[in-house]
Image (tube, rainbow, N blue to C red; front, side, top):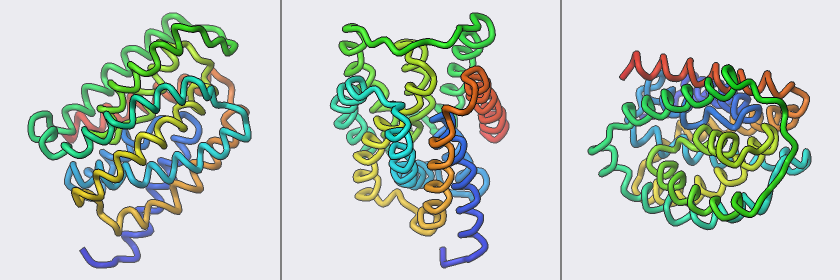
Length: 255
């Protein structure tokens, strides 16, 4: 497809929307951004995964810079998770075509969204937890590599990263919301960067879409990460839940 300035601007606008959402919640790049590329712009599933995954690297890196300044990152968990996630994400991205033939991307996304909504609804609406202080125990560090293998493989094949990681950090490791979001940005950036190499080698990138997305995701991600601590934690929790519900409705309607 040739260069089209209007289409590029629309990609940039979509990147800005996704960047803002991800900056505030660490959710949205894959679970909203990838289906958006398929539904709004007509990209093939594997191309949408690769393109959004590569754009996600840029977006997550810009968010990481802001989260580092705000001290929102638990580096021990991030390091252990990433060491295990790197090979898993590369292998699954390399085999994305084969995986998509067996498990269609839209179906996978729909299932992940439904599970995510159910878990977070129970946590945020039924249990209504009070704000937590950061407490890292030995079992948190022991389980982090196992989460890295499982979630890394999922990220490479689907480009869905923030939603499943932040849910694991919130519900399993029980990190405070801002720390869960900041740490998710780090591990997602690392795993997506590795997966991006595989997607590029397999020619899963729409370069026009990528070039259009980059300015928007950088700006949006940086703004969201900078101001995430200024938003009440309960508002962040409900925002994550609402985003997933909207994504689930859209994907299920279009699947």
